Image (cartoon, rainbow, N blue to C red; front, side, top):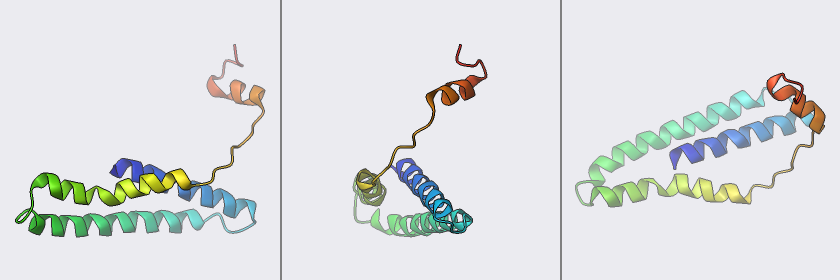
Length: 104
């Protein structure tokens, strides 16, 4: 579930960077967003590690794992609400650029 949350966060960073570039804003916003994502994940990991030790004294490992997996699974669930617009490309260009064989 953590990998899913990381992929969703990376996808949002890419989308926000594309939107910033399309609106004429600074595309360097990606660095700030990426730092925010990694910083938030690190703080969450530290908090989870700190409290999981004390929770194991009163709960089973399965219950602690369930609590720790709630937020990443919530991010995965919220990713279904993201409005995405498909990028349309010329099919011939896309085929020719995939493996260098000119689509043959």
